[in-house]
Amino acid sequence: MSMIEVMLPPFVACMILVAMLSYLGIHVIAREVIFVDLSLAQMAALGATSALLFNVEPDSVLGYLFALTFTTIGAFIFAMTRTDRTSRRVPQEAFIGIVYVVASAAGILVADKAPKGTEAIKDVLVGTILWVSWPSILKLAGVYVLIGIYHWFFRRRFLTISLREHEAEAHGWRIRWWDFLFYLSFGVVITLAVPLAGVLLVFTFLVVPAVVAFLFTRATGLLLAISWISSAVASAVGLALSFRYDLPTGPLIVCVFGILLLLAAALRRVVGAEAGLPAGL
Image (cartoon, one colour):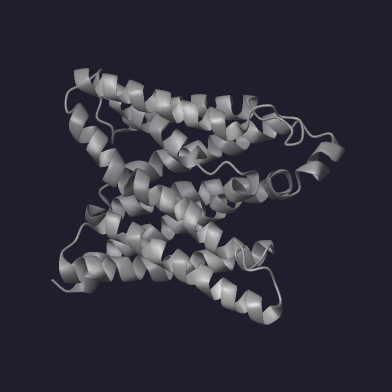
C-alpha cells in the first residue's frame, strides 16, 4: 500500500483533533492552566478503566459515558477552585496537578483489578491513531462540529474570561459557572480524543500550536491560523517520517512538534530583533 493510503485516515483524524484542540489551547495558555488537559485526560482514563470493572469495553457507548462522568467531575473541581488571579493564595495549577496525581494513582489501582487494565493504560498513553477507521473519524468530526457550534454560541463569554478576565469581572458574570461550562465541553473533547490519539499527542495538539502562535501574535484570528497551519505541517511531517522509517506514529509526531516549537522560538528571536521587540518567550 502507498503512504497516502495508509496515512490519509490518521492525517484527517489529526486535522480534526487539531481544529478543536488548537483552539482550546489558546484558552488554556491564556488562562495559565497548562496541564488541565493532562488532568482531564487522566480522569477520562480513570473512567474508562473503571468501566472494565463492570465488563464494559472502553470504546463502547457506556464506556464513553463512564469516561465522560469522570471528566465532568474534573470540570466541576476546576471551576470551583478558580479564584481571582490577584487574590489567589494557591495557583489553580496546583489543584490541577493534584487531580492528575490522584487520578493517576487511582487508575493504577483500578487497572490492577480490572480485566485488560494494563493494556487500557498503555492505549491511553500512546493512542491508536495509526489504526483509526473512517467511521471513527466521522463520529469524531460530528461531535466536534457540535462542540464547535457550542463554543461559537458562547464565544464572547469564553474568550473574554480567558483573554480579558478583568472585563468579565466588571460585567459581573458568574465566572465559575461559565468555567464549568467551558471545562465540561473540554472534557467531552478530551474523552473522545484520548482513546484515539493518546495523552501525549493530545497534550501536544493542545499546547504546542498555541504556544507557537502566542510567540508571534495576540490577535484571535491570527492565533487560530498560525495554530492550524503549524499543526498541519508538523502532523504531515510526522506521519510521513513514521511511514518512511517504520517508527511509532504518535510519539514521532510529538517529537516533530517539539522541533517545530524550537524553530518557531528561534524565528521569533530573529523577527523580534529586527523589529526591536523583546526576544523572550
